[in-house]
Image (tube, rainbow over all chains, first blue to last red; front, side):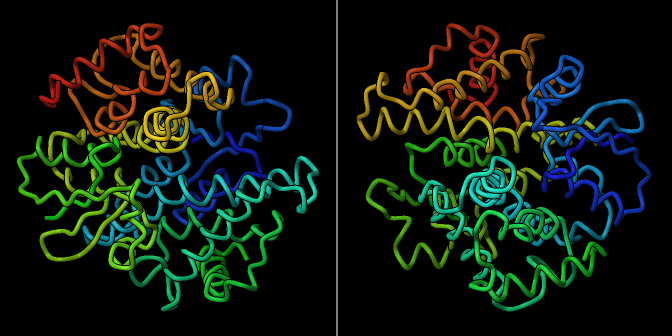
Length: 193
Length: 193
């Protein structure tokens, strides 16, 4: 398998962590978003959406979208709960991540860390919605443990990616102690601490 | 099953269409987003994210996020391809829909049709990205047929929801003939024409 990814992107790291956890062999093809390496004709032939991560599976076929790649790679593994309802709740968190967490928490980090914007000049709506997402996570994790079931799942991998670097976008994780403790648990479970 | 949904929302209609196609019995609980009925304490107890659709399954347990609900309801049915790679491509389209299509195509429609904003005053970036999403769909559908495999799948249900009403946000589907023909095919397959 070949993973086309940018090491600064949480969406790409998700795929690396899942592959490592599952013991899958792969080549990592570093693909620099800031240098527009996702916009070359060769890359667009691989993923017409022009986004990383994108993978070429062992049989040569391409696949994109971080969470779709996770679900494909992890099929039948302990990263996906066997119980149908827990599996559905895992998917709920994963779709919520892409719609209500990443567009705020990851985008704020990108603007601050990679575009050099001061935190004080971020769009207040972006900051408010990012904090709203972290608050929602905090509530979901108030009982401790992982997001669904008794062990780490794809929901944790999907959500820890940008949550653990939220401070780089100016968010203060100390306001979300259950989230902070969960980040450490997930990092330990995935051996990425 | 109870489906809490707003009939003006494509995300909610997705769930209705899938349930109807699968022959599942349900009560539809009309929940008015514009009247903030998704922000009441009772609704937030059901879905802390404060979004429709949300369902209460037959065993009384809640589930949210339109595409997670689709995947749960359709498990084992012909709306999900049996082939692992086709299933992964279906998921790719579904995550792409929530990240790169809905936030532009659906949001433009909401602003125009429900908030009364003139099309000419829409944020040009919103319009550009909405057209980018429709162009990407057009390319994906240039061979005819459905988004993955030989029959209608959850990818088509997820993407037709806001594509078929894109004109209400000022988008001109005549520019995307393959998309226009696909909308009709999906409507016929789902009997929602």
